[in-house]
Length: 81
Image (cartoon, rainbow, N blue to C red; front, side):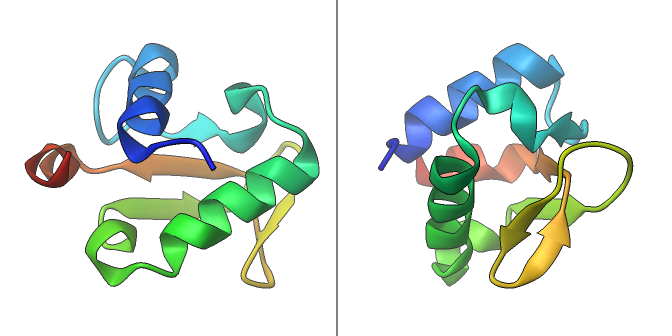
């Protein structure tokens, strides 16, 4: 599993700023890896409260059975890194 600090760094390199939507496909992982990674972090309340998933155009992934295409991360996640 990708460490949270690394995931946030990868998100920032794609988004530019916290709060911007990034396609899950932009993380460069396989569909299975993407679903496992984000579902794993979504299970942890202390982490998941900083993630905002949405569904729009693009490759769909199942995060706990919910179809999503994009994620944004709140800047406050830095308080737990």
